Length: 468
Ligand SMILES: [Zn+2]
Image (cartoon, rainbow, N blue to C red; front, side):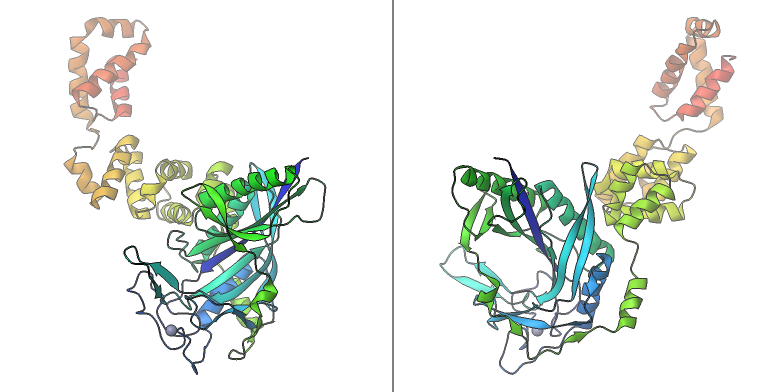
C-alpha cells in the first residue's frame, strides 16, 4: 500500500522586544541566571500582568505579513500544567480567540509552487529553563526566559514531504527576520519548531493517528526527524500495527525519534480566559498604519531583483531568501550605481559568509576598483577574506600586499618591448598571422610583473607594438 505523509508545523518565535510580555524585565539572552526576574514573571501572589504593546505590535506585523485575518477581539487564556520551569502553574497563552487566523505562505519545492495555510497566530509567554547539574543529581531553574514574548504560528496539515516542511519553516523564519521582530537565532532557541505527522493511504481523506515531534531547532533536524518518522510509521502500518498518538523527541545522537510521553489533549490543559488580563481590541486605524508601514517582504524583494535589477530568477531567489544578503545587495546597488547588478550578485553569492559580515561600502569600493582595473576580481576576493579576518581597511590591505595592478602604460610598454626583442621568432610568427601567440606575450609580461600587469592593457600594448 502506498502512503502519503500529512505534516503540520507549530513554530514558536521569540519576539525581539526589550522587555517581557507582561512585565518590565529585560529579555537579554545569556544573562546570569535569575537576574532578569520580578514578582510578575515569577508568579508571586497578587502580582498582575500588563500587556507589552510592542509585543502586540510585533505579533500583528507577522499576522499581516502572512495575510492572516486579525481578530477584532482576542483573549488571553491560562494553559494549566505543572512543570518546575513554570512558576505560576499555568502559561498565559491564547486559545479560543487567538490574535489572527486564516493566513498562508507560498513555498516552492523543486520549482513547484504550493500555498500552505496558516491556521492561526497567537501570543503567549515563554517558560523558564532547567539546567541539569553535571556533577550532582540536581537541577536548577533559570527564570530569565519566563515571560519572554512568543508567537506561535500554527500551519494547516497541508505539507506532504519533509522538504516542503523545511521550505515552509525557512520561509516563515525569513519573514520574521525581514520584519525585524525576531533575531531568528535557532541555536539560542529564538525560533523552534514542533511537527505533527501522520500517514494515510494515498487517496484517503481522513487523517491517520499522528505523532508530535517536539522542539526541533534546526532545519536539518526537522528534515531528518520527519524522514525518520515517515519510515517508522510506514513500517508499523505495513505490518498491520497501530500508531500510538504520542509526543516524540528527536535524539540527535542516535538519529531517531524517541517516545517522550503520551500526547495530551487540549482539554487536559483546562484552558480558561485569564481574569487578570482584559481582552485585546485592535484599533483598526493602528492596524492600517502597521499594514502600510510593513517593509518589503522576501517575495516582493525577489520580484524586484528580477524585474528592476535584471537578475536571473535563480539569483533573485537566493539573494531574497536571506535578509542580510538582500540588504547588502540593495545597499550596494543604491550607493554604487556604476556596478553591474549581475557582477554584484555574483560577488555576493561567491562568498555569502564573508559578505554578511561587511558593509555595502566595502563591497562597493572593492568592486569599483575591479571595474577600474586597479585590482583583479580574484584579488578583490583575497582582499575580502583579509578584511573579514583582520577588520582592516581594504585600501591598507591592497597597499600592504602590493596587489594593485600595474596600469601605467609607459612602464608596461618598456617591459613589453624588451620581451618582443628577447623573442624575435615568436614576434615574427605573430606578425605572420599566428595570433594565438598573444597569450604567450601577455604571459611573459605577467611573469615579469609578478602577475600585477593589467591584462587588458597588456593585450592592447602588444597588439600595438606587434603591429596588428
Ligand atoms: Zn518580570
